[in-house]
Image (tube, rainbow, N blue to C red; front, side, top):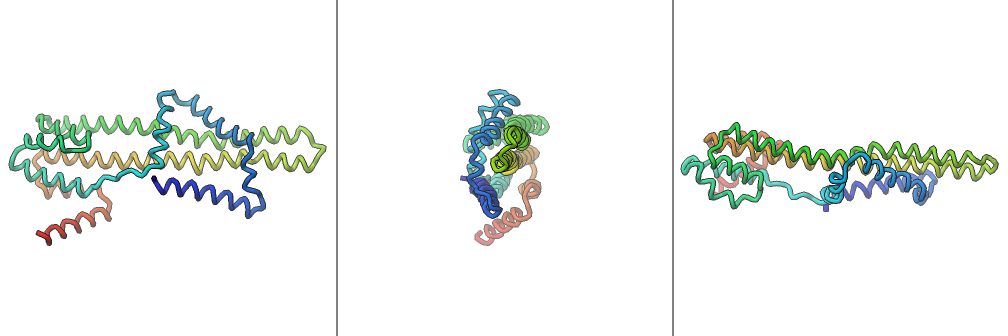
Length: 265
């Protein structure tokens, strides 16, 4: 479970519910059937119009990604693995990598190593692997755009719901007390639209984008590692080149791990 996603949604609900209570409004006021129908069914309708069915079928998978903690790649281990491969291939030759391909968990990395073993040029290897990243990023962007568009439509539908509520409220001005309640209920749709748009759908899109960016970064490290081995770079050069993709904290941990290994040796 991705705790940040769950905590974020809970905090959003608590913030709105508590805020309503402190303002003297019952949190149960948001359980307005008409407003819920206009906002959530209206958002679904808008998304169905905006995207083809084969794209919408991915929504359950996308929600699973949002609320599931991804197993982050151990970049330090990945860089060390490339260093070890570089040491061996400089001694045994690139064909030695063929024995390692079946032991690699990543299909992307495995395909890159296979291209290197097949004797393809670095430019060709980079082109093929970058095309795979571009295709993956395009798929990811379709998922991101679903929630981005939902976040755009929902607040506007909230205004639509408020207008509908006001039309109903102003149709009878004889009962002032009932009029006040009707106007209050009309703005529930606006509340739900803004809440769902800016606390749910837009943040969901950002979470998907963040996870996509992390996956792309790992694959870019793999590309540079494969190309460095193909070019015959030394383990030290490979380490320096791949470390440029790490944050300052990650680089410090990598250096710390290397010092510990040296002391143990």
